[in-house]
Image (tube, rainbow, N blue to C red; front, side, top):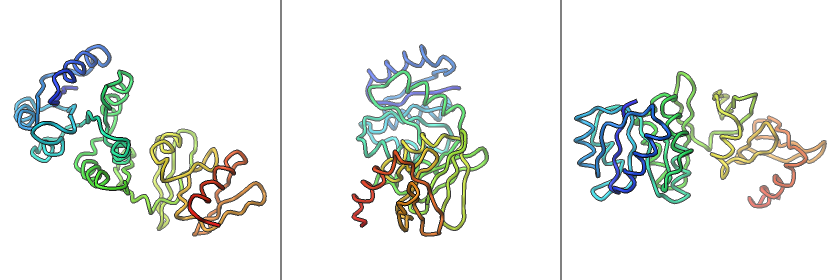
Length: 244
């Protein structure tokens, strides 16, 4: 895969170049630039398939660069952003590397970029929205589709082997080939793990039946089991919401 690096910090470009050559030799670096203007010109000249893009640069942002081009390519942002911003990246299904760059995270991000479908402008627009406030959308991908899901419409997630099924309002569901643990980490401030096989959005919980081990009853009548070892966490979570 042919790639370029756009970052206004020379030491970052040098370090990233060495890491790519050492850890992901399948990536062919064909150029680098130090800002939005240089990046736009370089993209027009070499037509890369993958872009390592600094989020904030001296002459603008990564968004400014992406808004100025029409070429379709996969993007891995390189950022020093806060924890809140990193949540926005994860929710938006946009790959990123946190400065200083970790080699293992580089390999993982490149592998994801090479294997995944191109999510393009939908993912970038979702990232913009999520960065402007508390993330309220998440992007999900299966083999054939990319879904933009409002978190408030997500009722619960259920795992089966290496797949996770998302159950939404309106009797909608999406089956995604990622583990429940992946989404537990991604949605840790929105959904709670109540059982080995379930993540639950408490916006849709009607009551907690504590008999027979514990069951959450959703507003649509669906019953979600609560394991013994998760009961205390569920009680604490309900307490934090002010629900009695």
